[in-house]
Image 1: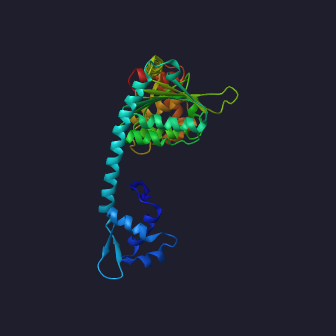
Image 2: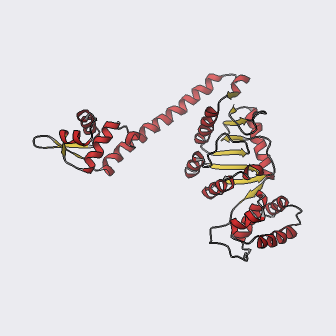
Image 3: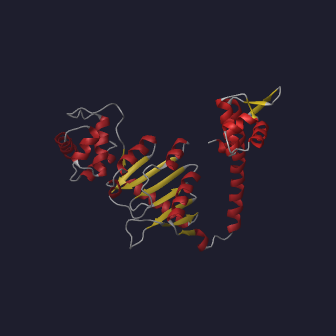
Length: 324
C-alpha cells in the first residue's frame, strides 16, 4: 500500500509494526516481523521522517503520526509526478517536431495483440485533458463492464460522449453499466447501428479496434490514428452520428415509481430512453417498477402522441421535441 510513496516492503512492515505497538527496540521488531532486515529499514524510515529514536539504551523507536508524516511524502511524490507531467509535455513536443513531414506510415499505427489493444485504449482515455468520444458496439475485447479509466476521467472533469449501438445493450450487464456511467456524468446516445467501434481523445489521437471476419466475437487488434486529416474525418463522422442519435437520460432518483405509473417528467424521460434502447415491456417494467400492462399503456400513449410507428422512432421524435 505504501509503496506508492516510496517505501519498500521491509520499511512498510517495520512502520506498521511500530504503529501497532511502540516504542520498540530493533530486537523486538525482529521478533514481530521475522525475515525483515530491520536496521536498514529503520535507517530509511528515520531519513524519511517516519520514525524517531528515543533517548536511552537500548535504542527504542516510535513512529511519527501517519496523517502528518505520510502527507509530507504524498506531497513530495505529487511534486515529482508534476515534474514528470511537465517533462512529458516537452518530450511530446520533441516527438512531434521529430516526425517532420508526417509520412503516411507515421499517421496510422497497428496494434496486434489484445493486451496491447486494451493498454492503448486505457492510455488514450487517461491522456485526454478535455474530451473522450466513442462509438460503442460489439464485439468487445474484454468482459469487464466497469470502465475505471472513464470513471476517473469524469471525476477529474473530462467530458465523455458515447454513442451506443442498440445491439450491444442487449448483452448481459451492458445496460446497467451504461446507466452507471450516465449517473457519473457521461453523455450518452443510442443509434440503431454503428459503422465501426472507435475512441477519440481530444483532437489528438484515435483508436479503432479491428474485427476479424473469422472471429465475430473478438476485437483483439487495433489501429491507432495520430493527428492527421484521417483523424479529422473520424471526428466529423462522430459529430454527424451524434447529431442524429437518440439522447439517453434516466429520470431523477426521486424514489420508486408507483404501480400505476404516474407518468411524471422523470419517469417519462426514463421510459423514452428505454424505448430507444429497445427494451421489451417486461424489461422496462423491471426498470420502472411497473406491471407490463402499465408499460404497454404508457408506450401506446407516447407513440400516439409522438406520431411514431416504432419505439425507436418515438425516441427520435422525443429528442427532436426536446423531451430527452
